[in-house]
Length: 311
Image (cartoon, rainbow, N blue to C red; front, top):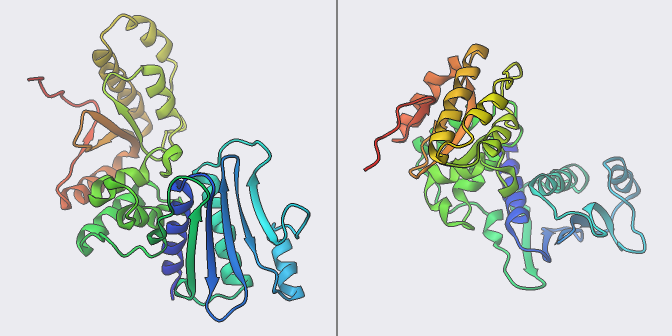
């Protein structure tokens, strides 16, 4: 199978670990091989283990790749993040474990393709494991729609290693209801990293506190490096007693105006709701983004834009 098949499998595995409850156990048996790999997600960490029917060269490669030899706590070779009362594992932790595991499956255990892996799993507590994440075949969008959605992802995150795989998992995975509609799946994949997205758009309610909106925009990877926020303290003081909706709308107009001299625009992707899905985009990329969204019957707005009158 191609690299793309491994990318898709990796995205499904990362999504499974991200969205599964604490005390999840996932095991990957390998066709025709005594070895296996297993994953454990706890409240304070996540780790992977690989069985030890290995040659000396394979063990050396595990060590070179950051895996630890068996010890009193781990009877097998393992790769761990957190533990011992650490913070709960986040999406980046789950992706890191996934990348480490895929490298071992391909390069150390020489698994030919994801089709040679047989997943099983359970939860030692409430909840369940959705192993269909590892066989993403449901709810696939039409080919033309999928091409447009993936083109949007690549346009917004051109240098990110996960866009296609993460978007495909959100579009095809059965775990969450929003994935039954492809555009919502795209927004989820591009959204807040805390919820397993790529963190390349910030989603805000209308009337959200402007301090939170400022912080969200400043942390976007697309935030222009030379965009000034010197204006913000005066803006915050001058509008402190404004109605929340008016204040947030005015804030976005100011932010867009200060992005413009940097050669970027502040855009909002259609959410079909009373909220914003915001990111910055180089101005010369805007026509392509509009063309891709139009292909699937959606729209992208540049800010500031005229507010629709309330009914």
